[in-house]
Structure formats: C-alpha cells, structure tokens
Image 1 (cartoon, rainbow, N blue to C red):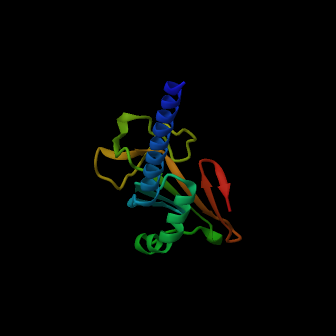
Image 2 (image 1 turned 60 degrees about the vertical axis):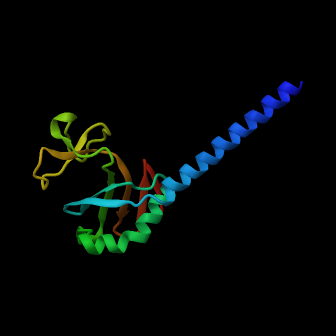
Length: 156
C-alpha cells in the first residue's frame, strides 16, 4: 500500500514537472521569438511576405501583424492596390531555408498543393525557392473590409 502511495506521488511530480516545462517552452516560443521579415515580393495587388520565427498561434500572428503592419507597409511600400483598393497579402514561412528549384515540384502561386515551392525571380541564386507554407493571409475587399485567413479559416 505504501509502495503504491510512493509511486503515485512520484507520478504526480513527473506530471507537474512536464507541465511546468511545457508552459515555459510555450511561453518562450510565443513571447520571446523575434519574427523577422526576410523578403517582400509584389505581383500586382498580391504581396508575399517571407518571415522566419513567426508566432505559432493565430492570436500571436494577428497580434504581430497589427503591431507591425504600419512599419512593414512603410518600409516595403506595400500593398500595391488593384482598382477599387483591393489587395492580398500572404505571409509565408522560411524556417526551412531557401531551396533549389529541383528539390521539389515548382508550380505557380495559385497551386493548391502545400508540397510545392514558391520561387522568387528577384533572387539570383540557385536557392531561391521556399516551401509554400502560408502562415497567414490578409485580404482587403472592395468595401474596405479586412479579413484574416489562418490555415483555411477566415477571421474578421
């Protein structure tokens, strides 16, 4: 009976330790990572922003955008608006680095596949492509409404 009580206490200590470590790691990853804009690419009214160390959560991503939107827009002179003022911004992840075109399938931006690459003609190197890992999308409609899209889900 006493052995079962010791095992139970030991398990509780292990679970508590793992929980505390998990909370500390999550806090670090969400609050102390410093996102960095690596590249900004414009095609008409579409802008692609390539980042590294972007927040993991939708809340963190949206908070980063709202806190940095003005600075990013001013520094990179984006967005380029279409007639009527509409525009689209996609934020892509570069954490796995730039790749050669031959390392995966190269298709157009409009491909629905997540396994292909998005390549940048302005980079004059063999390693000019990234995996198409869209972290966040920002859209502005004809009526000026702003929408945010995270992994297929739309947020006003």
